[in-house]
Amino acid sequence: MGTIVMAGTSVLVVLGFGNPLWWLAAVALLCLYVRYGHGTASAPTDGTSAGAAPATYQAYRARRDQQARWERRYRRERPLESRRQERQK
Image 1 (cartoon, one colour):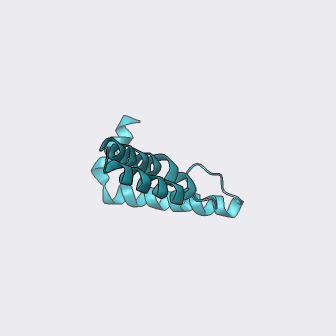
Image 2 (cartoon, one colour):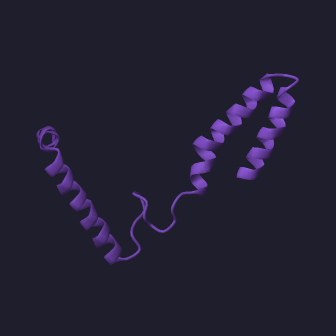
């Protein structure tokens, strides 16, 4: 996919020497690729993303324990912020 986008961008840039509107099309193509196309190909597939369910119970426990450690560290390092968040709940 990236090769096609780069080839298309190159063609649009070459065409842009005659008409600058093609350069805008090349920039728009790159922006769309970076925003939508690039992220889908590099998404993790091993279950480590936030929305994916862990494959095993051990993976679930490891993720839950890691999250608990992060939350305790956040509360320890930012006591005022954590108190404010508790009051808002």
